[in-house]
Image 1 (cartoon, rainbow, N blue to C red):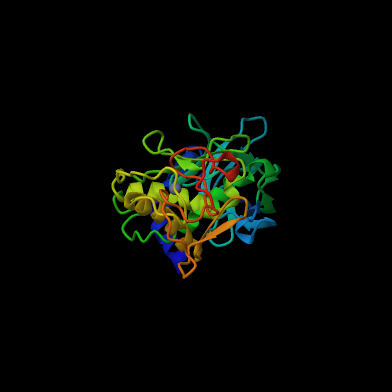
Image 2 (cartoon, rainbow, N blue to C red; image 1 turned 90 degrees about the horizontal axis):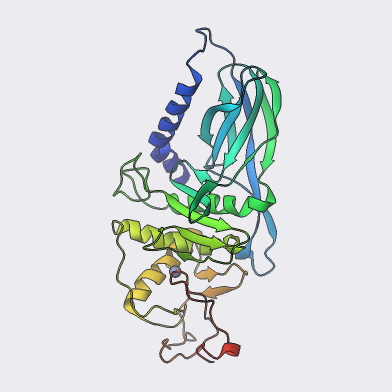
Length: 335
Ligand SMILES: [Zn+2]
């Protein structure tokens, strides 16, 4: 199973995290083994499912491989500090955040990231991750089940990105390191960074040559295809060793209209990454509308220079041009 493989691949990273946490825990710990104090539960988020169509039904999904931190105090009246770190289960989003002794106060902080392998931050120049805290518990000396901890709705799309990126990570076919490609060794991985803001309108592209972050805005994370398409651009850049093909005649580009071989190789690669990871043959927009990749007798044979149909025009994902023009603007290939 790919999920099981991912665990073994990530083991070195986890060992590093746990090791760091144990340093925090031991300076004044008594020799006697105390019963651990644990907060357990599962992390989940609601999301609008664009893959299900334009009605985008609201679903609940567990957040897998997502970072958590145990915070608390060992005696009342002292400041809370970080006591342990880890990630949620890759299977069911469960967490078990433990400290090797009783805690006067304890709570779990969840962050919009997965180890240091991928993360969602608030701005191109604001590396702050989204985070929130569970309910607080006092006088914890055994295991306390918090049940299902839900990501606040205002930031749930950040965790949809975090969870969806697992799907590509599990299929990246790198058996030599925990990183996105075998070009890097475990512990030295490049971090795949997404910038997302609910109130932003700047998004839908990979900021190649700038921050090299994926920039998303508003409801874009409603589409897993969109999330994975942009990851595909970053990943192709990683596979090339942080270089990227010289791309010409790719602005605008369309699913069904040819433009250039370099555009096909890069945009087609990103589309293929999303479709392969999700196991279908389409591109799904964040609106829930979709374009089929299936080739058949009805497939038009136009080009961007001499289009045969414009109905499938979709926004460019990497070049930052304005949204796909409509017939009303007069700038789109007309049908
Ligand atoms: Zn693209």
